[in-house]
Amino acid sequence: MNYAPGISQVEEVLKYIKEQLYSGRLQPGERLPAERRLAEKLGVGRAHVRAAFQKLEFYGIVQTFPQSGTVVARETMQVLERMITDALQIQQYDFASLVYVRELLESEALRLCARNRTEEDLAVIEEALAVCEASFYSDERVPKDFAYHQALARGAHNPVIASLLLVITPDVLRYYQRYSVCSVPSDEVCFEHRELLRLVRERNEEECVAMLHRHLRSLREFSLANNQENHFLE
Picture: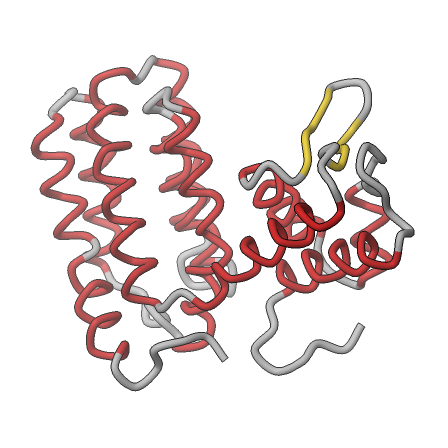
């Protein structure tokens, strides 16, 4: 599939599903194609299909059942079309807004992670950090960085916060790729990642949040500086 300039793979999946509903080839109550099948059909990664499905589920457009897969909600066609249009509009949010929401959500996630984490959570977070550091000088650096932060968010044991962070991640990553954000590795980033883990291990909630604000400071400043020239995703 050939992508229009500025169109993300997640948005392509959302638009495809909207077209299927509009044409009548997909009806309320019917099951969506399997992730692998849809990824092959559209020529996108399965991770992008999964992110699109998660966004659709977040907006109540689909529901996932253990035995039945992902099923379109039993709403009227007009309602479903409006809901998908609303879901697509998140693509128009500016980078500064996304960074602000990410920091807001992740601050509370880290506070809760320091409070609620288990030994099993720590093992998962440590593994995510090891993978992140192993990928530090590769093209996988930014996705693995986000995976580490997502592991911290899951340690909060608040699935709503973790899901909200996961919903906005594809949009934030899109900006990262567009502006080559954090393209130059920094020893300071490694230090801050390790400090977040240390503070979570010590259950130091306030210092966790303070370290996160320090960790995201340059990103926050970058987003604000670029927001005037690039207010919307093209």
